[in-house]
Structure formats: structure tokens, C-alpha cells
Image 1 (cartoon, rainbow, N blue to C red):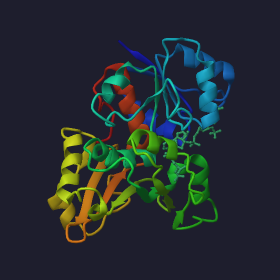
Image 2: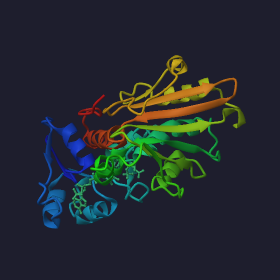
Image 3: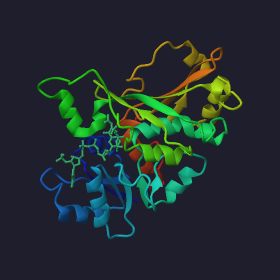
Image 4: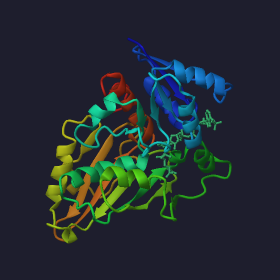
Length: 314
Ligand SMILES: NC(=O)C1=CN([C@@H]2O[C@H](COP(=O)(O)OP(=O)(O)OC[C@H]3O[C@@H](n4cnc5c(N)ncnc54)[C@H](OP(=O)(O)O)[C@@H]3O)[C@@H](O)[C@H]2O)C=CC1
Ligand SMILES: CC(=O)N[C@@H](CCC(=O)OP(=O)(O)O)C(=O)O
């Protein structure tokens, strides 16, 4: 069986990355609209309703508009935008979220791909909440740096424009109301919004997401080995999410934004000091990989009943 896939927004930053990952797969027939017709409502309606699975790589408003254009009840949707991540009737597209979630995704008609920051955050935090190591009422902070392609074509133009990059490193989200807040809160299972301190760096792609924990102040004062074991258990056998052994992270003195390169891998680390009772949990990923296009292709594979890592860069 050939699955008909339409990528709406196929010439944008995320859309192009998805097209690359789907190329050369005979089990898929991939449709994109050429530059002249890509915003034509009739052409989009036809393509949306003719597809088995559509992937929306659009700004939020255009993604909502695309969903409204779908009348064919057998068309399934993967939305890469923020529009539907906490919306009723949508399934959150993070297969690793918790046991059984992948099975829910396989049956879903509407799937919301996670944001890049929440991908790193939830991968680090959700298993600790499930294991009872991180109390649900604990005040959690998450910070880090992202490559500028995380801001799509407009931020790429800003950093690669004729005047050169505007800065080397730019903290943002200073109003503490980033659009990723609701999904981090909902899917972590925490009771309080995490304090989120993001930054963008003068690098095209790659990101570091960090959750510092004062283990010594937490109930039961979990040890670094307990935190590591919970993460290692959660992702045992995953080809996508890898937890560095403590011997490896213990020997590291630094970590680069580019750690996973242009791949769809998600690398997790537990750095810590048993003496001070402090830990730094860190996720390294590509904002365009597991943070966007890699996740969309992984979800597509799950929806279509295909091998989960087909087409991924691992
Ligand atoms: N970049 C990243 O790392 C990540 C992005 N995302 C999300 O993915 C989505 C796409 O982002 P990204 O690829 O970065 O953004 P881009 O701005 O690079 O691409 C968006 C594309 O959508 C097109 N578009 C805009 N409005 C319409 C419309 N009404 N009909 C058809 N096409 C339209 C744009 O056209 P035009 O070429 O004319 O501008 C552009 O080609 C966004 O919702 C973003 O938040 C999610 C995770 C990470
Ligand atoms: C560097 C940068 O600006 N990154 C984007 C997030 C990119 C992403 O995850 O996309 P969504 O917009 O689909 O959530 C931001 O923080 O808004």
C-alpha cells in the first residue's frame, strides 16, 4: 500500500527538512505545492482532502485554516505548529512521553507535533515525575540555547542578513509567557508552570535544554544514580533517545550545542555532584530534527504502521 502524504508549507524550513527525510521511500507518495500555488486555498483544499496523512508546517493561523479546509474524515493530520498542542481532540506527538502513548498515537487522527524546547524538557522531566522522584508540586526551571533556525525563515533572514548576525547569544522570552509553557505544564504532569529561560545562539541548528535540580532539597534527596536510572529505564532500547552512562557524563567537562549534529537523535545527560547534592539534567538535540522534522516523520511512521525510524537520521 502506498500512503499519500501532503506537506502543507513544504517550502518552509521545517517542510523542506521533512521532504528530504521522505525522499526515496517507495511506500510513500509525497505531494507538495509549487511556490506559485502553495497559498492557493483551492489547491490546498484539494491536496489536503486527497491525502491519507497531511503534515502542516505552517504558522499557527494557517495551520488552523488548513484543518478547517479538511472535510475528508479519513484524512489524518500531523501539525508541526503550536496551534493544537493542548487542544481537545488532539494527541500530543511525543511517542516517548509515557508507556502506552505510542499506541494512542498509532490510532490518532489529529496529532500535534511537540515544540522543540518541550521535547528536551519533557524527555528529562516526565520519567522523573512518573517514577515519583520529582514531586508534582516542585518548582522546576528550564533554560538553554537554540540555533536560530528555530525561529523559521524570518529569524534565519535576521541572522544571515547583509548586516551579519545581530548577536552571538540572545536570551528571550523575558515576559515569562512563552508559547511552549502550556504544553510543558500539561504533559510533564507538574502542578506549576516551569520557569522557562530560553536563548537563541548564532548557530543555524542545534539546541541544549537544561533542567537544574537541587536534589539535596527535594523530598527523599534522590541521588544522581536514582535520577539516571529512571531516565535510562524510560528510554531503554530506544534508537532515538539515548541516555549517556554516568561514567561518560562524569568524565565530560563541556557539551556543545552541536552535540547531535543534523540528526534526529535526542541525547540526555545527568551531570551532578553527589557532594553538593546538585544535578544538571541536559538534553541535546537538533531543533529541526527531533525538535521538528524528525519528530514529524517518526509520528508519520507510527500513524502509517511503518517502522518507526524509517527515514530518520540516526
Ligand atoms: N523551525 C523550527 O525549529 C521549528 C518549527 N516548528 C513549527 O513549524 C511550523 C513551521 O515553521 P518553520 O518551518 O520554521 O517556518 P517557516 O517560516 O520557515 O516556514 C513556514 C512556511 O509556511 C508558509 N506559509 C505561511 N502561510 C501560509 C499559508 N496561508 N498557506 C500556505 N503556506 C503558508 C510560508 O510561506 P512563505 O515562504 O511565503 O513565508 C513558509 O514557507 C511553525 O508553526 C513553527 O512554529 C516547530 C518546531 C521547531
Ligand atoms: C529560537 C526560537 O525562536 N525558537 C522558537 C521555538 C521553535 C519551535 O519549537 O517551534 P514552535 O513554534 O512550533 O513551537 C521559539 O522559541 O519560539
